[in-house]
Length: 87
Image (tube, rainbow, N blue to C red; front, top):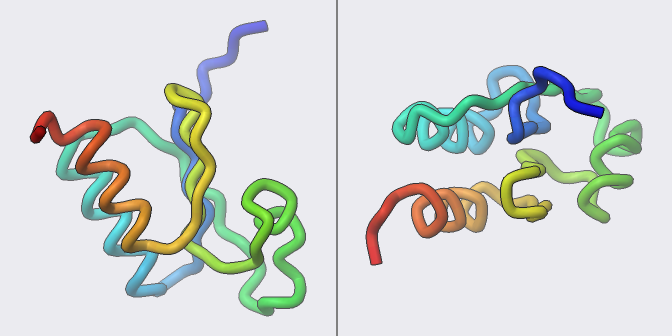
């Protein structure tokens, strides 16, 4: 069953500087992604907990590689290594 959804999903908050850091990196590599805005209340972020095991954002799911992760620094490093073309 194929859908037209982008392979990368970013779980994020509005006006979150850590989330924006990941957005800038996705745009830098011209990656197609979808944003899912999550609940502002940390305790209400059950959708994020289900996918990443944590309630923190940003969190990313990359269907291209099967990777799910959170923490902006880790995500930016992952995007650099996976899509940046640098060794």
